[in-house]
Length: 289
Image (cartoon, rainbow, N blue to C red; front, side, top):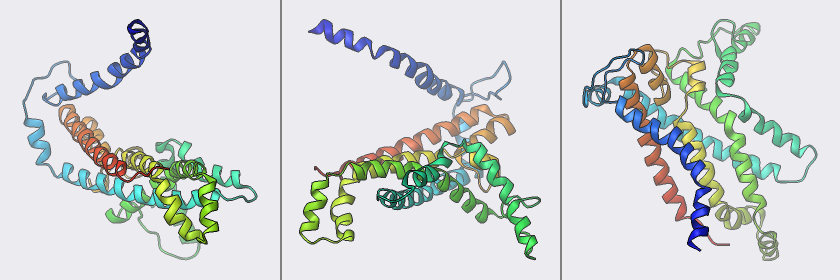
């Protein structure tokens, strides 16, 4: 029996090796670099202790990036899940071209984030942007959509939410289709209307789907990089930076790989803590069928 169990553990060896090569080693290397003054290019560097941590936590960039990262993560998650659930309830019904509607909603999710970002940039840019060209055509003044801090942040949120709302829709659709039909039929016999059936039966049984969707969307929102990079590159100034774009800015623009590694560890801890709290919360909400 022990020999059989030993052979079964061998099947885990390839996954463990891959995880070590692409997760553990880069993580430990990132921790090591965070204690150096390496510029990302030079063959030489020296250890500077906690200097990178001290200077980063005193910088305005980190404060802006953390606030924006939380804002992108929370607001995008809420929008994606509310719209995703509404879409799932709609496309779960039988109607003509139902599969085409599902594909249309999910299609943006298969587009690379940087491509989606540049597509949207060609719509919102001040000179030559499609939206401003249409406004000028109707006699209106051009608007610098991405030049205003608040407006630029909301454009980033809306673009990211629209791109990945299809992921939430598919998760909720799978959850809805997994609800036993006899529970719905029994509630209809008891006289429950559609709203009561959704609140009292479907929604509690969708907790595993809600948990998965919230976690996926939240992690994606907290790691948001490519759409911001393509639309604003953190501008105007540093006002729209997320932690992802701040890491890129510190490494390549400032040539400070040590501080970039420090910011990467801050982002890792932020995602880990929020994911842990969310997972613990939703575990307590699950119900037995």
